[in-house]
Image (cartoon, rainbow, N blue to C red; front, side, top):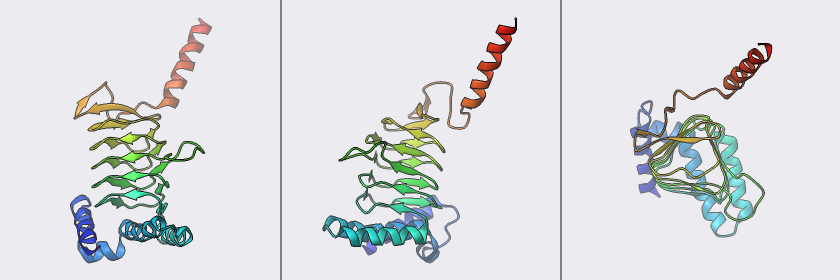
Length: 203
């Protein structure tokens, strides 16, 4: 456990330019507290002590603003930057060296039983406010843009943007003319189509 915490603190120092020292990270970063609490809750969950597991996770949620179901499986060195509003569902699997920003939801898309939450590979980045909903895999080294809504599998080394999310880059090469910054506004596009239709009807 001590070795794992040491690796976690180092991961924060490498990924967060605002991280100044191990003591500050350990005592003040809510993502660190949430992950440590989850390790304890997950142990109880695996030993069928569901009430204790859930009580630990709910206490952690109140302290950190990060809700991780005790059934979720989380790999090593998960960095949660800021973290407020993150929700991680029961059957979620997260690989090693992943990075989640605030407002991320790793959730289910329905009421079905069994595996109903996403699986994240290693070194996956999920941007602020992104929603990944359903039982599918996000491949290793994938990047999910801020506020994207992912409803289908994303291949390894890909960048996905938009609502619903589409792959726009694979291994750094554009799939189409979009990138993760210049995302078209669907409302603006709809208004443009309406205006064009009105102009056509008036003519």
